[in-house]
Length: 128
Image (tube, rainbow, N blue to C red; front, side):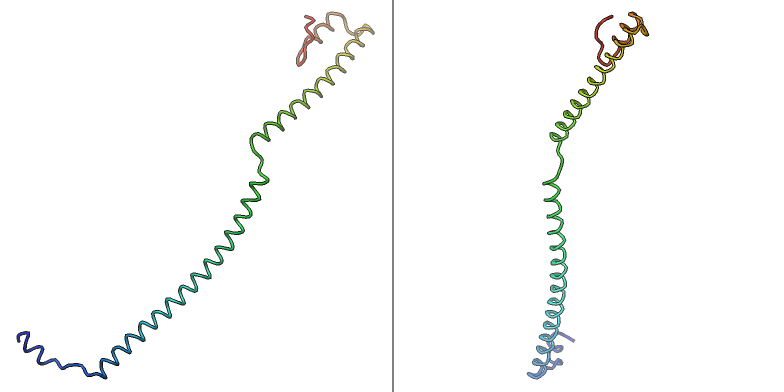
């Protein structure tokens, strides 16, 4: 059969058939639109939940930034603590020196022992 004879054998759709086909297409499109709308609503709800969680995370990050300890602060605090410790060691060293002098005056330590002890670290008196 040739192309012309095929076209002659096919019957033309009626207006009712076309209406039914168009109606079916519109129903399919409407169904797809409904599914799409439902999916977008679900996605929207999930985004709302994610958005709330991100708000919480942003608040937490802002809190951490406000209360964060930085290197400069740590350096200053460590310097202060070193100074405090050095001052305490000096006080104890003065007490120790006084004790050594008392022991020397009571002739418990010799002058040589006194010089040796007082020349020891951390703060040697240079009496070597």
